[in-house]
Image (cartoon, rainbow, N blue to C red; front, side, top):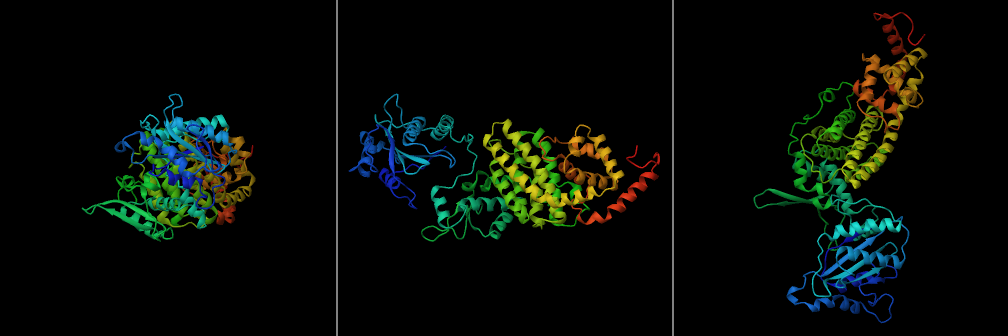
Length: 575
């Protein structure tokens, strides 16, 4: 149940004409009263002879009891209450009870004192009602409406439980502004799936991802095709900005501009500047040296995705053990990473990544104010994703996409726990939704590279496969049988072979990879360990072209083992 208090108005009659009228798209059906302050108000929808003017005069009559100088400049209070689309259809009697409890919760009416404001509730659709009230009480006093929005929200949570409706999480005032009904109708009329406000919010978030200056931000907005208006002080200082879609016009055929703050609280110019305050101008600042010097790939997208995986891995420690303000900054920056990854993703992962980014947008803000600066590695990762360009979805950049998404799933799982522990119900729910979309994107991205590794693992000779089984049991005795039963075991066995061929001790590296982070939330432990090992050993993420070389690798590995000091000469894996 979603209650929404609209802007106060001056004309009761004008609002009644709208509520009882056909609606902007003939969507109002059978408008009628379901409740009123005295249960006897005339209903122009169903009472013969009753007019809108009759109802307006009665609603506004308390204004005549006070001096005109004391009358509120805007005396019309308007609340809409809407149910979720999956909720059952309430009866008129039920909606009437909802209306009475909402006006009591807001402070509009006080049944116990009998001196409330006059109000009426109109129903013109199955799923919602509108309540109109005059902000002068029967005794001439004005109601106390401090925190009326919070009070009606609290009453909605109670009504949801009592009436068996969808339970919504309590808000905290940090959510983005919802599109208005007029914006939604306009989008439908124009054949667009989303409103202009929603399209602009996504476009601005993508432009902000990894940007380091106002000039870069506005260049990106212009490149995205947005119209831009800047608000400049007499001194020449930039105070703010507005953006519009070229095709979103008002009745005068002029573009409809939205300030950044009206798109999302963290998209105002001052809040965006906070991201830049300590980010520096060095493109490599905050980037792990190992990622900058990686010798595995020459591809821009692949290198950027490896950097993203490394930065996300490091950020996990901050989320779990760091200061709240620094953790909040990392969570916000993870939103930039998701936006950048979506903008550069291949077609087969784009839809799920976009849904994940849109969901996580709500999880990136809370009342914990982010301390910027120490999140620069994640912001740099977002920047490099944008600069690296779009991934083709195959080869090394496709495989490193799966690697990056895998790390992001663990990060967002940590963000879920972080929000839940602090009572951020809406943020935790949004992060859970984002994690589900990311898992779907991972399955699409990982299918090809893991499939190639799986085939390599199945073609390992029996002694070498037995050797990797022993490595697994020695490194992870508690998880070994579970991993051996997973479809991903063969991909892990191939990776352990690559680890050893690269000069690492597979037992110690596997133990280290498993010990640095919990694995309980992983859908496939073997998949997770594959990406951790390949990242830590700086191995190619895609091995599609190496299948034919495996026999040579196996022979050289066996020869090296026979020649190593201390070996008995027995073939590995034989008892």
